[in-house]
Amino acid sequence: EIVEKELSEAEPALLSAKQSVQNIRKAHLDEVRALARPPPLVKLTLEMVCIMIGEKNTDWNEIRKIIRREDFISTVVNFDPITLTPKQVKQVSDEYLSNTELDYNSVDRASKACGPLFLWGESQIKYATILRKVKPLRDEVSNLQEQSIDLQKKQQEAVDQVNLLEADIIQYKNDYATAIRETEIIRNEMNLVKKKVTRAEDLLNSLSQENNRWEITSDTFNKQMSTLIGDCLISAGFLTYLGNFDHKARKYLLTDFYDVLDNLSIPYRSDLDIINFLSTLSDQMKWKSYGLLSDELTIQNAILLSRFQRYPLIIDPPGQALNFILNKYANEKIVKTSFLDSSFTKTLASAIRFGTPLLVQDVETVDPILNPVLNKEIQRTGGRVLIRLGNEDIDFSPKFMIILLTRNPLAKFPPDLCSRVSIINFTITPASLESQVLSAILKSERPDVDTKKNEILLLQSQQSIKIRELEEVLLNKISAVQGGILDDDSVIQNLEVIKAESTQLNTEVEKTEGVMNELLRISQIYNPLAVIMTNIYFTIEKLNEISFLY
Image (cartoon, rainbow, N blue to C red; front, side, top):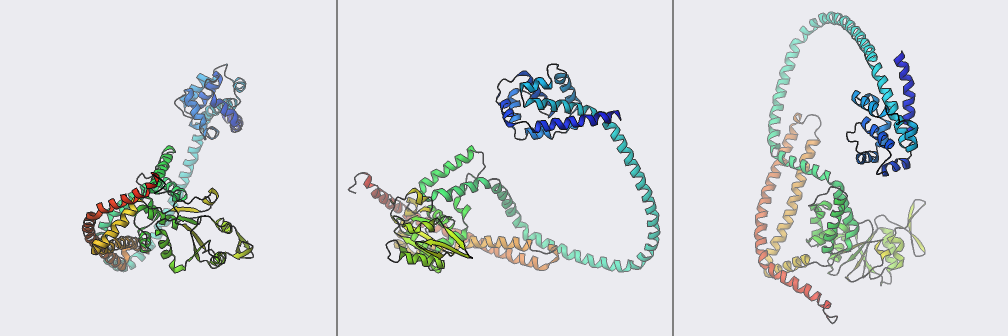
């Protein structure tokens, strides 16, 4: 009772000390953190606190790091005194609390942050000391209570056992009658198990080849998840900022992105392929069917055109983007116009109202009438979605899209316009020009090789997509099984069919790769000529740097 009384008296003091620590002002704590040479009382108090919370190193520089932690105050407030070891209690009592110069008033005068911490440490040591006295008594009471409960359980178990034995006598009589029926049930279950074993063997044979691929896929997925934040930041930066730049500048800026992530210690894939990260093979094949070239810059621009948040403004000196856009939106009946068209406003209003894609060409400057459209200044009135066009409010279709296009590579746009559109630069690059020249040479000199090459490229894309689809179908079939997978013969049969198709497709892929390598070997014969013609083009293009007469 005496110990319990002491404990009840110490507990309010401990709670009060915790509250005082919780009320420590950040400014007072920051003052302590900033001290390079603290007063002795401040240093001794913080050493005592660090020892109590389990820190080994009590060097002042290390203490400053500890109190800089975001969870320092919460760690102190939520500290459980029962975790204090006798060694810690003795060390704190002998080295700190026995120091006559170290008391609350002296420490509080030295630092408003350390006063509550000293009071907390003193209360914790007192409470822990009393708690250790009362703990054996509490443990003994608890042990006696547990023994009493165990004895009651044993008594009840004995009563239950008597009742159970009486019930067993009756049950044995019934069991004899059902023994013959159970024997028949067991025979049926044995036959069912044999069937399941057969199915399991078939399933293992079907999926054994998939095991390695799934392990590789799982490892790849884990690696991708570990760098997902960094990869997404790089991709977001690419989509937001790099459309305005040529291929060389984009690579340079991506390198800057990597440096920023390195400085921030954000993991990312050093071999991140922006194209494959932001698009699928089926997307790329679809874009090529619309007339898109296969060089890196052009495919990046196609990604930007498919993922824009602001309406795109395209710089397209070679005109390849124009053909791509017209083919891509042909089924949506895209409308071409320009600011010089006398019926431009009418055409614009019609496209906004009916959700028709609108292509505005020859954009050297932007008509102010487009400002509400580019800003997406949409109003909702009485269930209608409206936009102000000139002096008229017209219905705004969510399917509406406007694409601005200029073929002038030297066009300069004001910053306010650049902030409201997504600029996408289709300026020709050496790689894209070399690809076009090589294609033109092959069409002239070896039309058979050019035709076959295009057919093989299309076939390879289709095969890659088909393999991916089969892999997804295989996983979907397995995941869609209701109940046990071995209970359904149709699942095994479907997996066998899918596996056979996949094997046949892989064989075809190997054949097409052999044919493609041969076609590439023939194409390489004409590659030096394509390189020379590309160099001539860019040399002529730079002659104006020598003299304006060029």
